[in-house]
Each structure stands twice: as C-alpha cells, then as structure tokens.
Image (cartoon, rainbow, N blue to C red):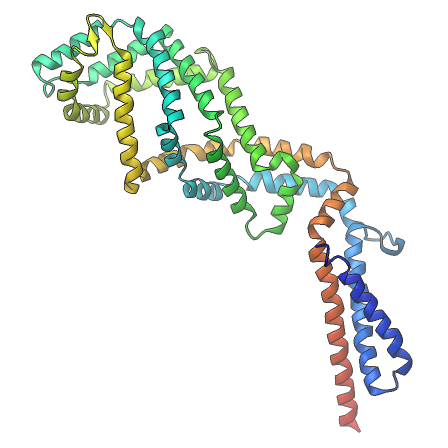
Amino acid sequence: MFKTKPMATLLLAVMTIIFLISYPQRHDVWWAFVMHISGAGMIGGLADWYAVTALFSKPLGIGYKTAILPRSKDRLVQMGRTMLSEELLRVPQMYYAIKREKVMVRIIEYVMSDKGQSQIRHMLQGVGKQVLSHMDIEPMRKEINKAIYKGSTDWKMTPLVILFGRCMLERHTASVFWFYFNRTCQHVIGSDAVYPYLYRVMVAIMKRYTKNSFFRELAIAFGGEGLTPEHLVDTVQSKAVKFLRENESIDSALGRYVWGQAILFFNRLETNKEWQDFIEHHKNKWIRTALEEWEGKLIDGKHVDWDMLFDMLIQKAQLLGRDILDNPGKQAPFERFFLLRSIPLLQKLNPLIDKVVGSELSRYSADEMTNIIRGKMYYDLQMVRINGSLVGAVLGGLFYGATLFIKGVML
C-alpha cells in the first residue's frame, strides 16, 4: 500500500503538467492530440479526486453532500451490528463450518487423549467415592445373581437399568453426581485442549461469512478485539464455565432441568418398547461373558470395586471410540446428532455479538471511524482515481481522433 499511496496524485500532476506544456502548441496536430489526452485525463482525475475526498472530508471547503462517512456514523454502527449479529451466525455457514471441522470426531479424539481420559477418570472416581459407594447395591446384586443362575437370555436387563437410574436420581445422589458432572464439564470446556477445536470452528464460520465480501470484512474489523476468533472463543469458554458454575446446585435452573429430564427418561423407559429392545439386544450380546467375569471380581459382599468397573467401562469406550474414528461411515450419525444440537446453541451468541459490536463501534468518534475506513479502502480508492485519469485520457484521445476523422471526411 505504501508504494501505491502517491500514484493517483502523481498521475494527476503528470497529466496537468503535460496539459500545460502542450496547450500553447495545440495548433500542431500531434501536440493537440497530447493536449486532449492529458486534459481529459486531468479532468477525470480531478473528478474522481473530488468524489473520493468527499467521502471522508470537505474538498475545497465545499460542505454540500460531502464528508459523507463522518456524518453517517450512526448508520455505519447500525449496519455493522446488523451484519454481524444477524448474519455471522446464520445456520448455513455454521452448518458448513462445523461439518467441515468434524467437531464430533474432535470431541471423541479429545475424550480418547491422555488428558481427556484423566478428566473422565477423575469424575468417575469422584462419583464412585462420593455417590456410588453409599448406594444400596443389594437389589442390583440380586438381579445380577438372577441373571447368572437363570441365564441372561431369560433375564430382562431393563428393570436393572431403571432401578439403577432411580437409585442415582434420589435427591442426595443426584445432587452429588450433578456437582461432579458439572465440575468436569467446566474443566473440559475451559481446558486448553478444547480451545483449538473451538478456534477452528470460529475461524471457519468467520471465513465463510466474509468470503468474497469486502463490507463484511470491514464490519468484522470494526468489531475490534471483541470480534477476533480468539476473543470470541475465550468468551464462549468463560461464559459457558460461568453458566455451569452458577448452576452447580441441583436446585439451580439447569440442575432441575437435567434432573427432571433424567427422571422423565427412566419413567418412559418402563413403557418404551423400542428402548427396551435396544437394551436387551446389547445385554444378550455382552452380558454372559461380562457377568461371569464381574461376579466375584467386582462385587465383594455389599461392596463394589468401582475403580475396576470404571477401568473396564473406559476400556470399552476406547474400543468404541477407536472403531468410530477408523470407520467414517459410523461417524455420520454422531455428526448429525451434534450438528442438530449445537447450531441452536451457537445462535444464542447473537445477543452477545450484537452487544460487543455496539459497544466497540460506539467508542469510536466519527473521525476515528473515518480513518479506519480510509485505511481499509485506501488502495481501492487510489485505483478509482487512477482509473479515472486513465479512462479520461483514453476517451480524450478517442474523441479527438474521431473529430479529426470527421473533419477529414467532410473536407
């Protein structure tokens, strides 16, 4: 930009000098041709100089319909707020960005990483010590024994699942479980390991939004630091962690909602044949070998070795995660599930972006805003002025050539 800065003014000066030199010798055909070219180029350059300058200030002190941008601060602010808050997080571009980044696959990769495994293990161990160790496991142990002695095929696992769920959903156990689960979500969402995935999604959304649109790029620039991908991701993480921290109690709005949904699920499980068939199908697949292995190893009287059980569950989850990562066809259902549920949540960022844009733009004075636009558009505006001079010069030469041709024909 530095090298092109004086080009428009320099070209205008050159056209003016050539015009002044050629004008006294205009009676010669060649010099007349040069005079018309330079004169038309000078006029075109001056006209475009006036038009460009009128956008930012008052050329030659003329106040009528000039200094357009400094007078349009309110409209620019409103335009920026509308473009960013209503268009940035539109469903098509969010869908494209999340689908392209395969966020669900990234989550599975994170869960399978050493850090993810450590956080999950910490949550499960906390739940095992604080919640499960105080549960009365005798009803479940009887059900397990029944399965072993009568055969897993004749035994229905659904009552055990419902019984376990209702034991977990007693107020005390549900409260402790929700606390540990909430804290784990806070650690995961606020962790540095999750940041790159959120950052790539936000960058992809912004690139999709500003693609082939200078004014959208300009609107993003007006957002200042508040609309950088880094700041938005930090804001999303901090807001999410703050929201979860404010809802750690089972009596909070989110705690009551999750608790109520869990209770509703287990209530529906008693009558939902499709879900029961799903549970029984997988039970018949795994229960024979699993129960034979667990009986005597995991249950000692009235106590359960929860750590061993959790290790087995994590191992099974790793195998499932690896299977999903190695088979793209199995990733599609998870991706669709994540897309359908993540887009409405992302759209809730609109009020936040509107607030950020409004506060960021409002702090600029009209002159500061004008200087920002001038800096962003300087190269394009210089090219407008250069084109004005060059187009004027070409037209001047053509008109003069046409005049000479007509005179020659008439003579």
